[in-house]
Length: 152
Image (cartoon, rainbow, N blue to C red; front, side, top):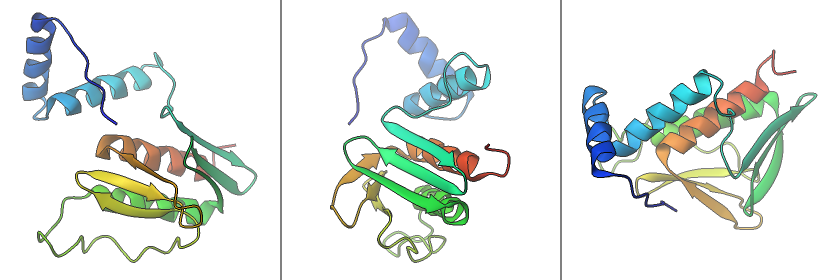
């Protein structure tokens, strides 16, 4: 769910200018600022509400209050790509995303578009978590990071 934040008019104008300079939206500008803070080590490289960790050759992905699933590293990397595919712009409106393959994760976590967001759904419990595209990109990156050879 989105959160509305009240900021002084002067800061809002600065944020608008920053967004324009980076050819993005206000939300995109906030994402860029957060990414800069992560890169600088000022905040943890995590997504609130998600736990993504690796133990041996198993990657565990948990969305608090929705689901917790484990998968091998290869499946985790493919899952990260499935998430990215869901946030790519549609090539032909109404035709679906031809870059998004059939979901090979039946029984694990399903990925689908929901409006402008991405829905992650546990097919067993029907629990789901809908997240913004920028958050989905971070989840995919963290899944890749956990599945990488140098994660341990």
